[in-house]
Every structure is written in structure tokens, then in C-alpha cells.
Amino acid sequence: MAENLNIPLEESNLEEKYKILYPQIKSLIEDENDLIANMSNVAAVLKSGFDHLWVGFYLVKDKELVLGPYQGPVACTRISFGKGVCGKAWQEKSSVIILDVNSFPGHIACGADSKSEIVIPGISKKKVIFVLDVDSAQIDSFCEIDRKYLEMIVKLLIDYSDC
Image (cartoon, rainbow, N blue to C red; front, side):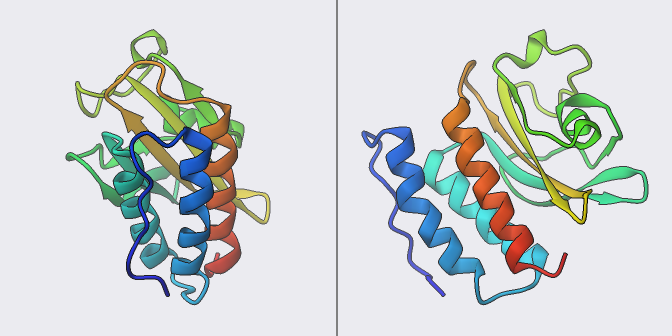
């Protein structure tokens, strides 16, 4: 298990940062099968590595998304199926990038500082079991590079945890 992170410098480009952090995330979680513990470490790495406003997880419980491990300001506790960006990713079983949350109909404003968002569903046995939610204080913060690597990270969580 890696306990010290090599955080890329600010001037590193986005893909370089992910290429440096991805193997460290894998090392953190590959010997641990508890999903909550692994989510906690992933949220910490992504928050530290990219300085996003909010990085965290919502777990599917009954017919709602319920707040799980996260890093950042206080968050919404429960989100209904199909509601907001997280609920949409859950409903569609696909990643969602929103460049400006104010232009997204039905956006759930858990905090006024959030300006853009990416949500990646964690799917096991064809069912969404959680979503990874990342918010930025800047408009237009996320792109296909983020989607690619965050989907890879979510896959690690599914593969190494008891899901």
C-alpha cells in the first residue's frame, strides 16, 4: 500500500497528472476489498491531486443515492433517481459532463460555488451501485481526458472491492 503520494506539479498537463496518479490509486486499493475504505482514499487522492472543489461518492441505497465518502464542503445527503447530474448518470448508466451547472435543467445546487461537474457511475453486474461526483469552482473544468481516467479509476474500485 502506498501511503505517500507523488502529487504532480501544477504545471503538469491533465493527462500527465492522471498517468502519475492512476498507478498510485491502484496501489492504494489493490490490497483492500472494502469499498468504503477505497472510496475514501480515492476521494482524497483526487482532491489533493487536482484541487477540485468537491470529490466524493454517492451509494445506491434502496431508491436513492446516499452520500458516501467525500472531500470538500458539506454536501447533499440524498439524491433521487434521475434527479440532478448524479441522478441522471445513475438513470442513464453513463458518465455525464456538465460544463456549466447553471445551464443544466434540474441541477441540484448543494453548494453555490460549484460551476461544473462530472459524474461517473460505478456499475457491477449491470447495476449502478455508486456514482463518483466531482465538482469544480470553475466553468468548463472537465473534458474527455477526465472522463477516460475517472472511468478507469471507478473500474478499479469495482474490480478491487466487494461489489
